[in-house]
Image (tube, rainbow, N blue to C red; front, side):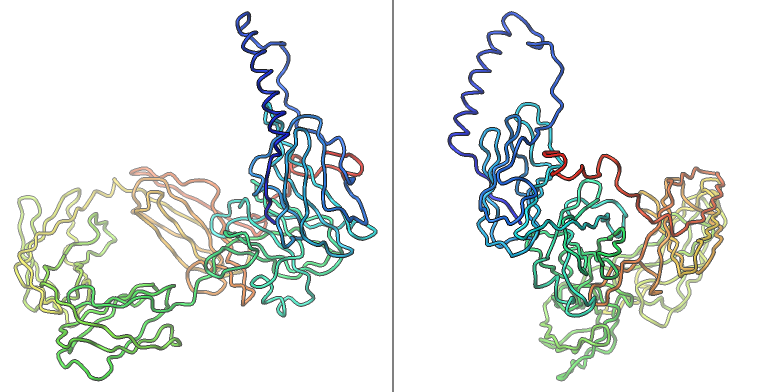
Length: 570
């Protein structure tokens, strides 16, 4: 529930008068002294509530205006974010600051026999020193008693595991985890809600007994409605029953959208590009009549999951092509591609990787499919030495071909490879000039050696991910139970290691899926950065346990103060 914030004209006049009087006092005093006027200590005490009308924790509440008086002048900070009422109302609260008082106007009808909580978060602070009153709540009931149950927990990002602040955590009253609760986050406002704090902790109190679905959102538009694939979400894996309330741990993730074709066109020379919304596991296609007889060879790339596919053609003579396509073996549609005229480009060719380790295979890569013609030789120049090496002929058009013969034994040397004009046969009739390509073979002493023994203490399918902070290297290895790795040729630098639970065995991290009630896969991070230096050998042993994933409870500073009835204003 958002708030509308106003300051009354009388309050402004009082504050202006107060400011002018004190300004004149300090100006006069500064002529005689440069220190603190009274020499006293700085005020560090937040505003305290003196009284509330109606009283806090009132029952049989019928008022539409609440006045809260403090012991000093106050102001509000980020009131629209921090002040909200739970359960939510149809209309916003209207908040007025009047000197030492706060006025709250309720313009929506209240439900019968319901306990409401107005949370002020960190909005209230004193006027002079900005000391924040961050533990005050105003509670009232339209019935004869105040509901007293509560739930609390933490919310974090599903990938980084970092606490998530300002996430909206909601409770929906329901007796069925699957139906009708399936539509609750999409269509209805919650029965209760709260907002997570800086440390990702949240608390919903003054609840009535019952069973609740707990659902959380990165609610970008503040309407309590879930927009799949546009907002991150989290949910507790079962209904919460108030007779046995668990500590709730929520992990935000963004559901993937169902893939569909967003754009298709002839955007490069003899190349059609399909751009999807969402990632597809597979993309199939078929040309429909009238066929273009000039198309005798074609290649789709890539063949792995992605959101963009390129269809390379040997020719394209007709004005248009109609193509039947399928996404993930289920979504079938057609698209019409109109021909555009392009100048014949020069292909781009390179060797990869540029820095070749003894365990690497060197590849010849291009931006258009090609074959290596028979009886093709490459001139390899290494320092003052030159040799001619036969290149392996290929039958299929591909975007890369392995060149295992180029991995020579020389150390810490740069090598050049010369390929004569048009020795590569490009799909589409592209021609190339003389190619002069290079790569480097460093010494083994310039690398670092890493040995890892990873022994998770529970039975599951896993993925070990090792990545360099600079982003120049990443390694992903699926395994089960336990793994020992010998990695002898790693670049010096700082690395991060993490363990992913691969429950669906798709060899990558998977987000949560609300419609399947599937939680995001857990990620465990090795607690230290791994520093590798040249000619070092490092050994690591890691035995992660499931308890490593449990978040600590709230600190003493975060725990709520006693009931306002026992200790008002705190």
